[in-house]
Image (cartoon, rainbow, N blue to C red; front, side, top):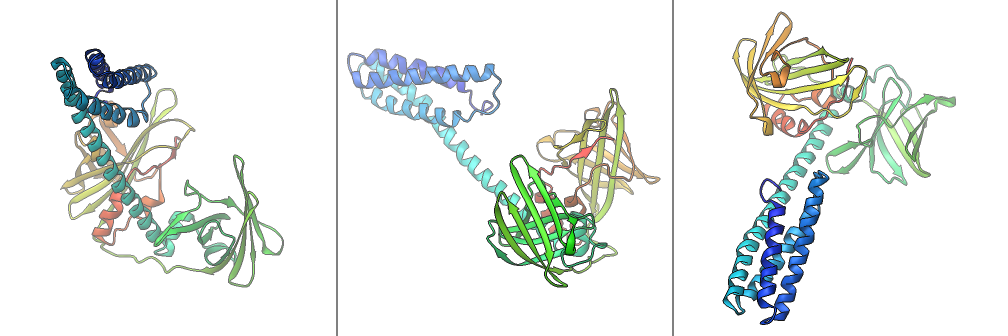
Amino acid sequence: MHHDLDPALLFSVMTALPLLVALLLWRANRGVAVVAAGLAALSALCLVMEKAARAARASIRVDLLVTIPAVTVAAMVVGIFAVRSRPLAARIAGAALLAVGVPCFAWFAWMMTRSTFEAQALTRTFDQARRLYSEETLLCQGNLAKRFGALKGRDGACSGYLIVTSRKGSAYPFSRAIVNDEGQLYLLFSSQQGIEDNWMLDDGPVTHLTRGANQTLTGERLAGTDRTRVELRPLSAETCEAKINRNSKIDLLTLKKTELPPCEIQSAPPVRFVGAWGAVVPEPDKVRRLTQIWLWDIDGMARGLLLTDLGTSGMRRDFVFVRALRGSRRAENQWELRVEGKEASDPPFTFALSDGRARITGSGNMFGPSGEVLLEAKEFAAHPKIAMAPVRDRERFAQYFDSVFFNLNVPWVAP
């Protein structure tokens, strides 16, 4: 907001002009003068708050969503009454109030309208991302394993891929459960048609299950004061009952073991996944610089993801967001790529493959002092959303890329 309208300047003007109107109309129109004086006092208070917020370096100013429209609307009201009063000087001051208040309020209204449309568009993007991620997860057995881990080595009715057939007392509309080979339990629920989300916000498992008597599997998760205990017991060769006790609220699920079809393998998919390439370069003081690229080629047009970060050795970096790349193939095994979006002003860089490695040549701001990085065919950071990118269909891949990869967070641990 500060880049479009300076609140300090607005509140300063809205302090001076109403005060002038109050002085000019104090005898001729005491009611309007009192209202103008009140507006001047309110604007002065807003000015003090703005100065204090800047001194404290506050980056989020929710109060401006109230104070700016309140001050500008009041200015328009005072201005309308002032231009109908005498003397002439009061009319001129009232006209000045209108000249400031009307465009500022119109600007604020337009910004709020635009923000509403942007928020709605963002919501549609996130909903599409959830739907596509859900559909790709449940498309085939291989994709299910990419997201939740291997599902081959465990037997029994309460292991593997399980579909919820009935629920009792469920606060969540649970739809599926997955128990992988490591004993990790995942729960999916569906709050919207065609979308199934992981019960855990971090897309991780609910708990780790251990086997007890009579093939019973139990596990417990404690997050702050939130305690979840899960117990799975077989009912038959292919059915299982899950008891989920979350803070004394119990859900009973009946699960049926099933299996998804194998993933289709295309010899020449329309979207070619060039590969994942990464490097971790040592920096002073045990700092590691990560550079990683995932690249897809569609008939010479390239889409990619770039992950760059600095981390201390042994530290887990939980919030590292990929940047979308767009470009084209310039020669055999060589592409020119550019960062999309707000960082599109960054200069393009070259990505070239040779002898099983990749070489990036670009600016020092993006890739370190030399501007050049040699990458291995290796993922130092991985994410199932990237692994499941649908290369079988160009249009679906474009939708998946623009929505599922939007603001994608890929945590990693610096080696």
